[in-house]
Image (cartoon, rainbow, N blue to C red; front, side):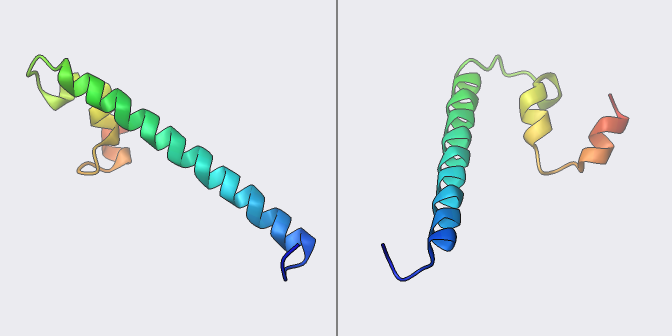
Length: 67
């Protein structure tokens, strides 16, 4: 093993696995957004709940209040 105690190394490995999973999730989301964009009928953002939800322009509290 390396210079780290096994508990530290184990925690580091678990963290790496978690980060890899999150990256895979974000890549899957990106693929789905690309698919959505390719099928867009040129409507408004308000008609697309996924894009509306991910939009950083409007705080989450404001979005919930308008539903």
